[in-house]
Image (cartoon, rainbow over all chains, first blue to last red; front, top):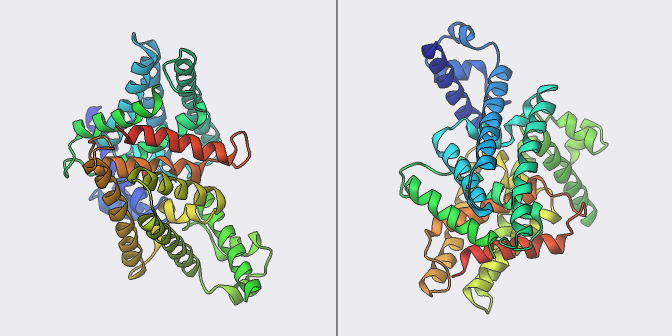
Amino acid sequence: MPEEKSKKQIIYEAAARLFRDKGYSATSMRDLARAVNLKASSLYNHIKSKEEILQGICFENAHRFLSGMKEVEAMQGTTSDKVRALIQLHISIATEDVTSVTAFNDEWRHLSDPMLTDFLQLRKDYERRFKMIIEQGIAEGDFRTLDSSIILYTVLSSVRWVYDWYKPGKSIDQGKLESEISAFLMKGILK
Amino acid sequence: MPEEKSKKQIIYEAAARLFRDKGYSATSMRDLARAVNLKASSLYNHIKSKEEILQGICFENAHRFLSGMKEVEAMQGTTSDKVRALIQLHISIATEDVTSVTAFNDEWRHLSDPMLTDFLQLRKDYERRFKMIIEQGIAEGDFRTLDSSIILYTVLSSVRWVYDWYKPGKSIDQGKLESEISAFLMKGILK
């Protein structure tokens, strides 16, 4: 049902914007209904609760990043090509889909267990695999011998402004954004 | 009254931890009273409202960064020494004072006007002055010719994980943290 899916996507995106601007706790289903031009009663035909939306958004994004990671692990190329591809993955998801901000900002903290534990597990798995690639680059002698956790979190964190602040088309186009952030970070990583 | 000031500082720090973990909206004065081992009625002797705490934290941190900026602008040294000093400023405030996380995470969004406008004004002023230093480095030919906004926000954002995730003394000590993040970022900036 592609039409249903698109409605859900519209609701997810509106919810992600509200969570970003007001925070999850301060956002009501009424705010969300207003944002998507539905009566609250119609909204409930699509979505059962605010928490269901948060879960949907967090897990969709987690799986998107993990499937990106799987592709990168399987790709031909040097270790630095792999890190470059992961940086591109983060920037392109951030600029193309506003819902990713929810999974990356602090809103996932509002998940309740067992969802919270599951989400953190996926995140930890992603970070562990990213860190292994960095450690491989250090072992091969192509990357600087900095602490691999410091490199990992500095890279993950550095693309975060894109989720928060970048306004597409406003003065920096997406191609320039991707190539310059990537150039900046890769120079910091490589020997 | 140093004792009074220290009580306020204890309350600010407990509040910053609660805001970080639960979000500002979901934190109650009752939670805060419990966190500092006071009866709610005693807490009100020190602090009038949750918003007063948020204001205090945000403006104290904004002024701390602006006074750091003023020192950096006045210091002897190259433009790259200045950028390095600003990066150190961010990392040391992040590791030494948990309240800084409130001003840097999204919690400042809960300020109401005119405080919100004033705070954003201070932030904009800080960013403008940081960007001028970066542009000077590019003009002098020492920094790479990347977009100055991309450099600025990548640097500001990259130290943000320190606020969120770094646990002092856990395996990376503070000296190593500062020197490696700084080494990573400066290599990205310099030609």
